[in-house]
Amino acid sequence: MAAFASLEGFVITRVLVDKYFEHTTAFAELLAAVDEGEASHVLVPALHHFGHAEGVQLAIKELLESKNGTRVLVLFPELRTGAAP
Image 1 (cartoon, rainbow, N blue to C red):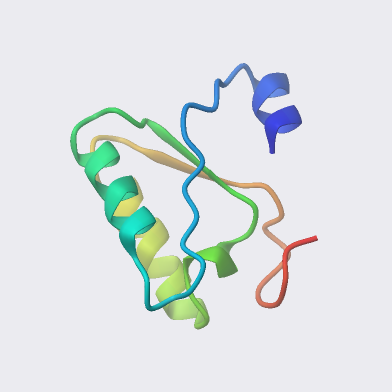
Image 2 (image 1 turned 30 degrees about the horizontal axis):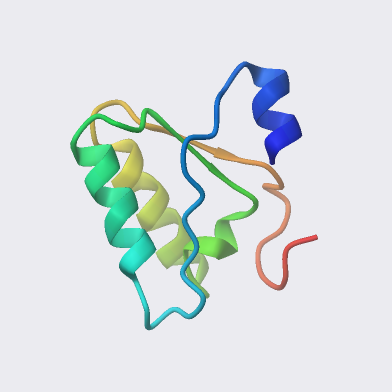
């Protein structure tokens, strides 16, 4: 992710990780950063990091992108479920 960000001219300012889907502290922090205009781009390895179900994944992506013109960049869009590479 760092190499991709560097190549594309982005600077990673935070890495947010929720270890379990029940613990959403990092997701809440992400929403706050987007709401406050602190984050204009969100880089995620694959959409399954947003949830198990494809509908949830797309809904979260759309939610983030509906705020302040935020763009969600998906490193491996072909990965639908499972573990990240």
